[in-house]
Length: 455
Ligand code: TRP
Image (cartoon, rainbow, N blue to C red; front, side):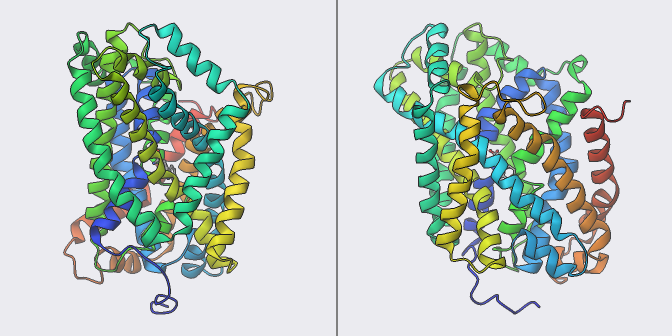
């Protein structure tokens, strides 16, 4: 099984390329848009601590499991389970992942569309105002439009479609290797500016001084959902990327590196945003629009603000691009390998499918605002159903698979690179986590968060 099909299959060409792609997947709107507003809505520092615990004890083991499953099978999310357990329905976990990719992309591309629009709006000076009411108005008029936000969403889909069609090495790897360092440099510059604002210290206190009375069950569910969303786990994106990773790579080490770097980026995004929130007297719990309303006022107060603002939204677009590539690669790998579609055909069909589904998310701020599913607009429903239900559920099954189904010796062989790495101690900790802690913790948080059980 090991040698088959391995020759023709594309893969990442270097260790740096692997890190860039995997980190490129982790870093995205999750860090710059979601992390700040979810943290704001759930009380700040105490939430961040809960998030870090979820990340380390639950998200990280699931990420490693996905990498192991992917690399061992060199297959897409569905094919991987079929190879390891041909006669059992585990492949449905991969199938749910393919569906999740469409659902996440549906609302993700809506937001990236707004980001694209903001690159141009900031360049034109439309956002250069120190009146928050005015930035609020610019944002509301953008999202409640019809043609304008749809136009940007379609543009986003075309851009990533082109990159994906270029392939794993020439598309994904090449683009993320360029974007990741750029992103880091831009964030450092913007943090320096934000920290030098007059009221910066209350923003920092909000981010780093915990108040544990803010921790509720729904905050814990939100932290878990965010941890999964951030690390891109629970739906097979990391199985797919793992399948492009070389046998020599040290997978546990890579997963830890990625999780740490990703957390650093989230905190840096928090430092860019919260000092400004407090300096300008906003409410930290402004929700999803936080980024689009606050950030422009920060830039407005500084020399060369217009240039920095353009850079900031460009940076956000870069970050989101790497993330979208990993989401898109899940159905692409699935269609090309399970149905033998060409990469071109798979990309075109997937992009059109996402465009149709995604337009309902985009229009949920205007013509579709009255259409509710389980009491939520399309946009909120796609977000909630994936982050708070499908990703955690996927996480449970992936952990159970690695812990109980795949076989102790097989998992160990893959994690130690056939015995070459001396990480048996780590392996034992990992096995205990995926067998017991991960599935039980997710199940409890999920059922309580959804009000199915009460504690
Ligand atoms: N991690 C990305 C972000 O923070 C989003 C993302 C990319 C994702 N691929 C994923 C989320 C796969 C869940 C599953 O923006």
